[in-house]
View 1 (cartoon, rainbow, N blue to C red):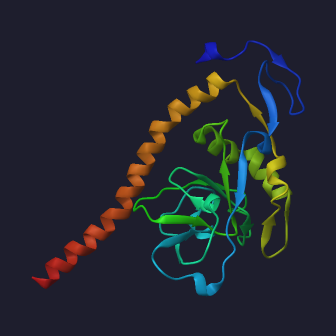
View 2: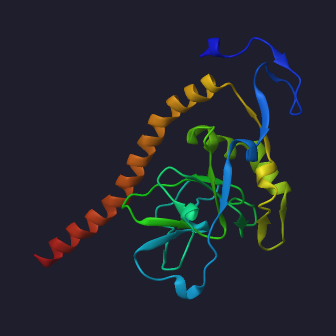
Length: 213
């Protein structure tokens, strides 16, 4: 791995970075889609489910139990698929533990998932999802989100500011190497979360059968 890194540093707008690496904005390497606006009467049904603020853990990460039923209309790009990266645009926690935090969506039962208005979907055809996730989970992006938020009781992150975030992009070979290391780890996380979601259901079913007998 060390052989992949340049042996020289050069000046950049973000300080000294390895030679051949680049500084780019999120808008140059990804596309961010705003979630769907909805009415309270659309929070019903079982065909679709809304990925919303409750789907993101404080500090980042995905919650399987945070979905809401949804029966409204949406655009195709607002549908969230397994492995998609989302971020929170709104936060009601005093410590801003949700604002700008990323989560990697897991779809364990093939329900069609739609992003809500307070969620942004970050997709890239240039960067692997693993690298994109950790870029958004970095201390620099977290501080950037806090500094570009407005509001007092409820914090809102400007959708115009997120794409302007500047970050360092390594060479393609390093990004791919990073992705290859992280991908199996994400699969283990997916498997563990799936089991954590299924086991309580199986436990309750076994208890129910035991009580019946």
